[in-house]
Image (cartoon, rainbow, N blue to C red; front, top):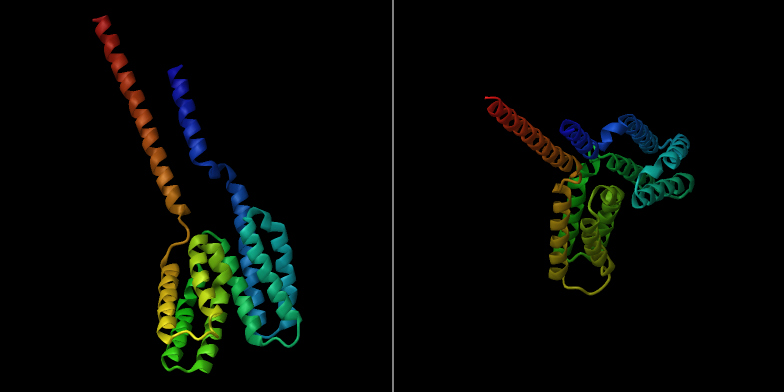
Length: 261
């Protein structure tokens, strides 16, 4: 009876601790869908960059259908972010008068966002750290020179770079981290036309730069670490249970032999 209870306890622990193993086939299917979406987003970017807008638009429509089918597995926030990115690129591809740079930026942004959905992705948005921080440094240089026109131009350039990574940032990072950076950037750009002392603006830029560096340096996915910790804990529990059972058998066997003798 005790052996049956022990077996039941171990099976229960394994079932609770490793529920994903029972859904391996389902998870593989999800990963295949994600891979297909990333590949489609990559092709959309390539055709957009090559200025083959009809082909890019056709592929984007295909990607939108894939996303409509697969989006239910993601959070409401991630669904909204990806859907908004798709709609933005659709508008830019189909509406005349938009610059090629805007289209390419939107295509890059969409590609980065799909990559961020994958917990095992490469976090490609982090590769844009030099561009984003370099554009921010040009804003500071314009301020130090007290060149208002150049300041406005460089600030627009930085905001464009930031908007490219923003969807991936929302998906890939903790919301409180993103909100802090976004609040600082919004406050800074919102006061761009006000008469603010250059030193104050530079101090604000330094705060933004520090927070952005922190965002780029942090690891977004702590799930793998959590799984490792969970596995280790469960392993320790199982070892303890087995050791206890072995000790009980040893004590019982010794007592039985003593009674016999």
